[in-house]
Length: 332
Image 1 (spheres, rainbow, N blue to C red):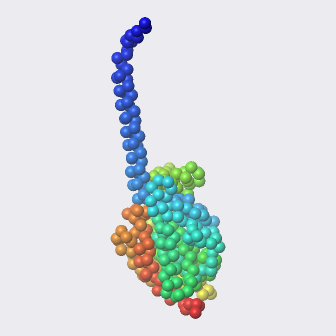
Image 2: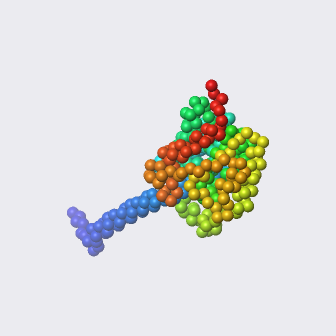
Image 3: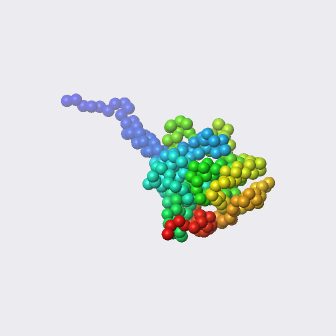
């Protein structure tokens, strides 16, 4: 009969198994900690740029700097896709409903501005342009086509150039330009943020944390600065206004400016410059600083964008003016 005798080191086996179990437990805890930390950081990153960076691309027009790229984009990818918004850009550079036709219809009104009018974090139906269209149709009892051609990040000279281009392309009856305080600062070429590497484009498209890291990269490594740009040069502002006035002259299009908040430039009285050129100017209020008026979960406290209620608040102040600028309805 064979009797197995314990080896010299057999007493170490229980201790080895205990150490292995403890090590595996520590690894699991460490992995869970890393995953938890990732989700916390990704959640905090939602207070930053909503993107996606691939939404814009370089423009051949030096006065535009960049333009919207045709296609369909989403505000967030797979991680934290709460309140995810879809952005559909038509070939004419205007944001439309995902169900809109590929061809642009005859346009009555063009609305311009930056990210507030574009409506980051909101579906198209909740944008200022879409809500204005609904309000005008209720008032006039007739179809009204409103093109939402705002470009996120554009400053006033860029918007004025867009107004010229849309004037020639669409021949609208009214162009409504929304001007916010920061629109008088110098223009930023946001196309510099568009990743050329497909992997980076995917990461920044699906992870807010990826956007934060990429912003730091282009800021620190590539030396692209987006802050402390100062005010736009007075000559550039007045020249852009003169070019718009020249383009409008001889047409039936009315251009109306809505100044939202305290729009101030240290060297240019914008309201006086506009009215002296025969352009219509109106002051409107920004939505109240209450949560229901702002899409805080998408823009973050530092950069809130109007919610559907906020868009309605803005539209309630401008729809009457736009309706009057349109003139009598042709519908019986």
